[in-house]
Length: 323
Length: 208
Image 1 (cartoon, rainbow over the protein chains, first blue to last red):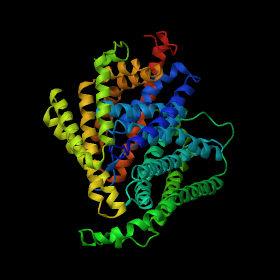
Image 2: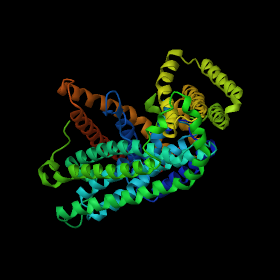
Image 3: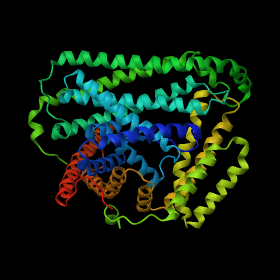
């Protein structure tokens, strides 16, 4: 997830760095209004926690593994402003203690993980939680959906930054790059929502007060929440996918005309058949739509799975943490 | 040594600013170079390697870090031809990304070698970063190692019970439970620290 230096152009890094600086600066400004004496120890502790949590590997396939990103989790534990600061601190420590990620690329990395992850993630999860009356189950569903959507949104923003960096390269097809990024991050997002949702559920079952202030009204009937959640997830996916696929079209058509002859000249090379493997010119749009739909259905399934038995086990909430 | 950083903050030395500025300018320059300017890139690489040699960087560590970094940057560079098709310029684009990435990575390694984290905290404070940011960063650095040990204990407990054999689903569930337990313990610990700070007169204002 960490962008190294050299991938994005310097102006792109500086511009995203300015956006990140304003967003983190505003978060710090908002923190001064809140419980100031609690901010420093809790933000530092949650930042250390997210950092340590990222050390735990989750096996994916032979040899590869994934880990937590944590923006949505930090926002759930601390609120959006301190969550954004905590993720920024995580990225600073990863850079200046372990040399993970780039120095100039701190700007885009903070934008993707702290700003989109925590500020965006908090907005999404609280909007979804409010749909269901802000019960603990709906907060969990909000966490699951927000985890997937923030990963997808970060991938989209990252693709845009990458396209701007390579706009001088006539061979660059934005649509194809976006499609690869979206497909890849659709899977990463499913992992993130499984991990973040699982952790939130673990805490909600044992110590709900850490995540949650009790709701003023009782929860709504289960059937309505299923339908509402599915509709909400699909609406967000459908809203997201045209946004993702409509932007490249103009650029792509312009680029296509200049590059098609060049692709033909490469037919003698080792990878001559590569372009013929791609099923038709519209494959990138469809794969983005498909990754959006499959991802949102999978994430909704996760939300259903993790959220359902929560309120059927009232006895477990009295128990302390078991290890 | 770790104990001292959060509580006693020394003064920033001018050398720290220079180190930070030197690393930043190498990265800035490297990432602004075009493909044709490879002699300048080579010079920057030589300067960075000389800096690493002057900082007594053990070459085994350097090789190990590079061995971990090169596959990542190569994969990132390959994402372009994989999505774009292997057009005539793919090699040049990929080589540019790998070259810029490696020089910047080495400059970053030099920086963390010559600028210890407590010195960085002091430098950031001298650069007028908001006090709440620097104090939270110092807190995080202080408790990072505590949580690290907490994770090691949880992992030992997991290993003692699973006997090392687990399928993927079990591993995911165990990992989630492990981080979930860490969340509970660290939030409780943060709460205890907050109360201990209050008992010692903490009111949210950092005095130095």
